[in-house]
Image (tube, rainbow, N blue to C red):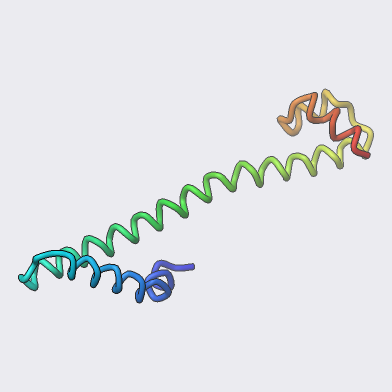
Length: 103
């Protein structure tokens, strides 16, 4: 999802939150209200982007681990030694033994 798509999807929510914020404040200056709206939108975008990056950061190791497990299973099925599988995948010998016991 692009940043533009995100803004389009959440625009109504963002605008409603800005309106609520404005009605709770004593601001009368239009320029001040505009600056608050811009800061709110920028904060929303930044928070959303940070959340995406955090999710990617967590997903990559999990995906890599799953891939290495599949590789290890294939190597076990080919009859390779646990020592060789550990060296090739970076998984622990205990992990390999547990995988070996699963099939």
